[in-house]
Length: 219
Image 1: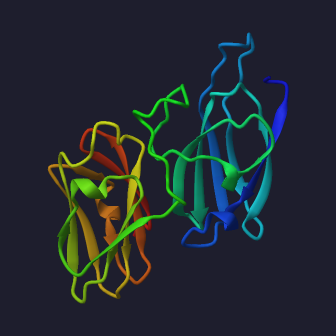
Image 2: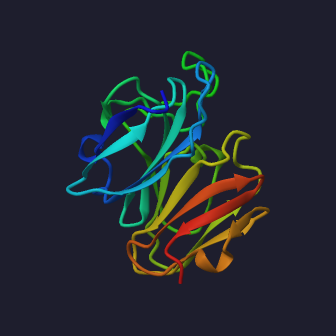
């Protein structure tokens, strides 16, 4: 199937995310070639959406192949999920998303964590806060509504073993300085973990054991 294509319509408005989607990245993470002798080159597409929509010609591999999709609003990650290659042209909103890397067999339930209507778990804190294991579900946004400068602490040992590649987001909703600091965990780069104004947002991606890569608004 590698000489064929299918059209994936990025209908971001149909996903009801928190902000309008302006850009998308699609990467093939696993290619199932059990029924094919062909070798497919890696797919890594960066797409600009117009009015939250774009149509992407995707190289078909075989059903069972796994893609990762990252949807962004002007650089801020709004969705980071996985999906199985569809058998035909599809709308992105029609696909079943996985918050963790899904198994090769779609009927397996062990790794499966399907987003229910892509709803984020949002919590609001009003001062210093230490992240908890329940915040490591791949869909949590921590809103910091403190009236004074405060620290969000990332302790060691809070992420489950399968959390690598998944994320949580921290957003400053007041005009104070919020610092994100590791305690038994590494936040990299440490000098980027300072949210200086209303709307400043960072996403923490779990890279390896107790190591978090920070993406967002660097000073």
